[in-house]
Image 1 (cartoon, rainbow, N blue to C red):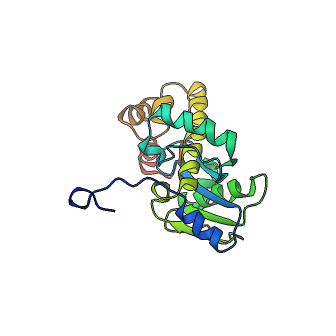
Image 2 (cartoon, rainbow, N blue to C red):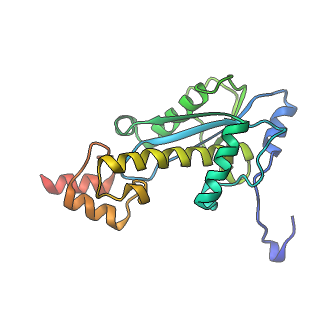
Length: 214
């Protein structure tokens, strides 16, 4: 793996999937979520089962890609893979906590695939509770597994669409660009315009503003 002073750029590959296939698993789903950190909007998960014979070139962690690259890859993933997207609502985030809500969205995404997978590669260091499926968690999995990278791109594109739609219903918060994250302009809008039903009321900046109002 050489490189100058040991530095090298890793690109996701199919090695985790190959390892699972060696254990006789056939339909291997990559699973990732986006939207744990924002102050508003749902948390969104995607599950993707790639066709090993038609893996789009350039799959990577969605955060490392430009918006144009993400959209190009999203279209290729949609055309060649079994894809499922699911959400957990703001209410579920508040009822369960953000980690459990993320895992709920992941389980929903897996359940929504056209053909049930027999193995899941899950981004992160934990697997969802009560997941009735053999699986493996991979820290920074979207940088190592093409299936998880494909899920990260799909989840990002779909959640961004949700936030752009919500931005039209609630103008002024900048959701069409900040996607619900706590940017300066979003915090300022919260203070000036108040809290919407799509804000996560237990997240500190939102909670503080509600508390100040009382």
